[in-house]
Every structure is written in structure tokens, then in C-alpha cells.
View (tube, rainbow, N blue to C red):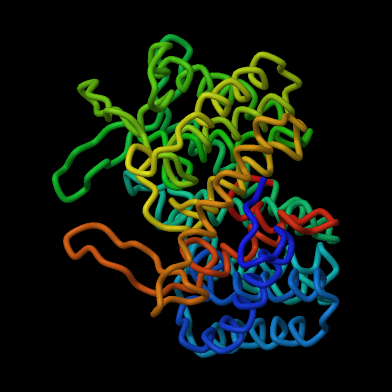
Length: 413
């Protein structure tokens, strides 16, 4: 259960926080340079359209339309970053989703297919990079956009084109996989500057996102035969890295080096750790009708639900990427999927933690993002991935009496 605050019940508290976020986003979006769905203005447009639907306030949909106009303006003026997180693929994906959700009415085949050549060229240019498959910044994110185009296009010619392109990405994944003992893994830089290579399990940059991507293709007859073996082999590899039973920390490491050194444990977050693995195994189990995978997913997520110490979980802020609302949203998603009360209670716990983090006087709606690294500190952020647009969308999904699809951009929905 959520705590009462200032005499308000839980729904009033959340609606008030959403209102605060909506007002700030209305003013602050002009400071954003990126257009991608996760770190840019197209993601803020998603918030505005969903908020307009929740509150029945057309003015916020009008702001969403303004934001999309700004996306097209930036592309026409020479914006070239192609990635899903920050660039053209992510912005185009957001437009596809808004059309799918009937928030806008445009001919995506006409408006978006002109971007295909540029994005396909990015895929070709990135194939040789050791970390080519990165979801946020590499081929998988752009491929994920083309999955959406494949699903939604009304043109048989374009559908065949996207089918061929996606099969090429699958072939690249097959070619670059290392298969031992019927287990598939992909080597990449763990620390590029220090030439440290290994196997990254993460949702944001690693093998879990490959599995999630393949599972989305496996749902279609056009791809099932091509991907199902590789999908099962990669799941088998993930299972082989599970920590011994009885640990109080994570079920899986974040990474393992080429000489078999594992990270001690992994954080509790969207980007790295058990939650992305659990949700992905749940998805694979549903697509392949595999009860073992689904049961394992639930067990992993129930184990992770016990981890509530902010230091042990490395939760410093409230954002979706590696903060409290990201954990809340993933557990809320699994509660909706399973109706398991443990997931409901865990989502409520992390919602309270997230609301308690709104303490920054210089923040947006009380929130700031914690930035680690060489120059650690707090900064304001409005994006979906690390800022208040994502916090707002997760609160919105918690409250909404209708289904929300925005979290597909995080490989969740």
C-alpha cells in the first residue's frame, strides 16, 4: 500500500505529482536537443499524449503535436544521430506507437519510410563494431524500430522489405554468436578503454536484450523457424550463469569476462540485473509456451523482490533506468501479467521509495538524477530514461484504467 501524504490518499498524491511533472515538461522540453524516445523529445511527447488521455485534457495532446513538429523540424534541419535511445530510430518508433494507440492520425508508410535508407546504412556501418548489438545505441534498437514497421505497415512491398532486413539482423546475430554446449553468447567490450572483453548480460546493452528482441520475432511465422533455436540456446546460456541458491543478493551477475571472472552481483534496475532477465524470460515463456521459463522468471523476480536496501541495490535516484520508479514499473507490469500479490506489494514499496525521493529543492517536481563516474553529482533531467517524463509515465501506468504500450520502448510491454 502507498502511504498517505499531507492528508491526501494515494491516488490524490500520484495525480498531484503527475500534474507537477506535466507542467514542468510543458516548459522545459525546448532545452532538449535529442529527438529519440528514451533521451529526447519524442519520449516527452509520449507522456503528453498519455497524460491528455488520462486526464481528458486536450491541451496536453496539443503539446504532444508541437513536440512531434519539432522532431520533424530537427530532422529536416540535419539531425543525423540514428540511434533508438537518442536519435531518429527512437523518434520514428514513438511516432509509430502514437499512431498505433490512435493518438495521432498520419500515414506512417508515407512519412517514415523515407528514413529507411539512412537507418539501414547505419546498420551496415555498425556491423563490424564489437558492441554492434547494443539496444540503446546500436543495431538492436534500430532493428526494434523496424519490428514495429514490420508489424504496422499497410504495404506488402514494405513488409517484405522489413522482413528481409530483420532476417539479415538475425543472420548477423547467428554469425557473431559463440556456441558451446548448445549455449549461445555474444562477446563485446565490457570496458572499451581498457580493452576488457566479455559477455554482458544487461537489458540496456547486452545479451538479455538480444533474447528479448529474438522473442519478439519468434511470435511471427516469418521468423519463428529462423530464431527459435538461437533463442533457446541463448536462454540456456543465461541459465548457466545463475548464482548458487541461498544468496541474498542478485540471481545473476551483470557480466562475465572472457577469462571467466564474474561481477560480484548486479544492481536492482531496468538497465542491468535480474529484473530485465526475469521479464525477458517471462516473455520468451509466453511466446514459446514454455512453462519452465515462465516459472523461472517468476522465481527470479520474487527473489529480487526481497532486495530492499538502497545501498545493496545501488538505487540512488527515482528514474526508470536505474532508480526506484523503474523497479516499481517492472513489478507493476508483472503484477498485471500474473496478479501475484507479491508483485503488487513490491510495486507499492518502490512507489513509496520513489515518492520519498522528491526532496530536491532545485529539482523538477522534487527530482534530480544521480550521475556517477569521474564527476559524480546531481542534475535535473526530463527524459523518459532518466528523468521526470519516465517517472510520470510509470505513475500514469500505475493509475490508468486503460492499457498503456509506451513501455515497449524499454522492452517491457
